[in-house]
Length: 280
Image 1 (cartoon, helix red, strand yellow):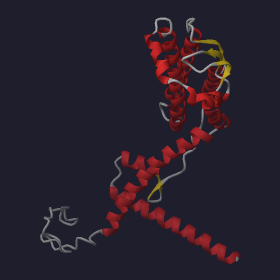
Image 2 (tube, helix red, strand yellow; image 1 turned 120 degrees about the vertical axis):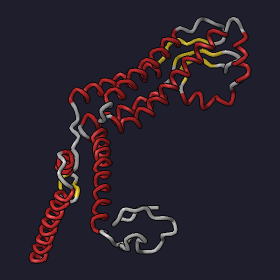
Image 3 (cartoon, helix red, strand yellow; image 1 turned 180 degrees about the horizontal axis):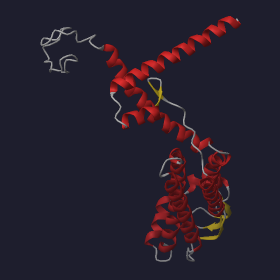
Image 4 (cartoon, one colour; image 1 turned 135 degrees about the vertical axis):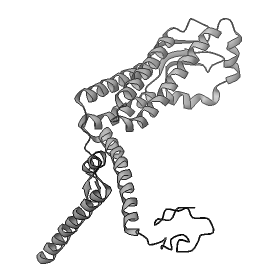
């Protein structure tokens, strides 16, 4: 149970009545004004910290023209999947195909894939290495796409103290994964089952990732000014309130100043309402 707000003695679970059994004070309404003000102080300070996060979030996406451009450069690389992946030729156990292979080709012929037959190449001396390299290259490419989406979500922290490290870390990791994937496509050894003549979509994807990295560098070089909305605690600007608390100003003096500021604000609001009535 809680303590009595008047005498401070601990209340038992059986002390459910309105008055304190120790001092007789009314537990419900004793010093209720001050208690409500303290609760309001805590709520306004919490709101201030929440508002700072909201302000940083807004600045990360729309703080500057480059920040707005980053929204598009962060997602445009995904469009590379509609570009033909590579010029290739496939033979059994793959589907019989020769030419430009794209996402639409995959969707059109996916029913014809013999997965068991393809995996059987892992036991074939002349196809095992080629298939492993090909699959690893595809996995790395898909992993980079997943990380790209995660990176977009992490843009919410772009204006935080660690925002630069987060963005640059994602950018470098994405480019490295894609570069390794592209190199592995070219490193596939000759085999009687499939051949990659040249890659297209991964290269386009890599170029778009590089553009995105350049935009990130430009944004952090230019800087984004985070505009924080003014917050108050009991009518006192919150920066001034924190300074008063830090300087050890007695709570009674802070509360008196709050009542003074709130009364002034109320007078200003009433004056505005009266002016509006006069204009009507």
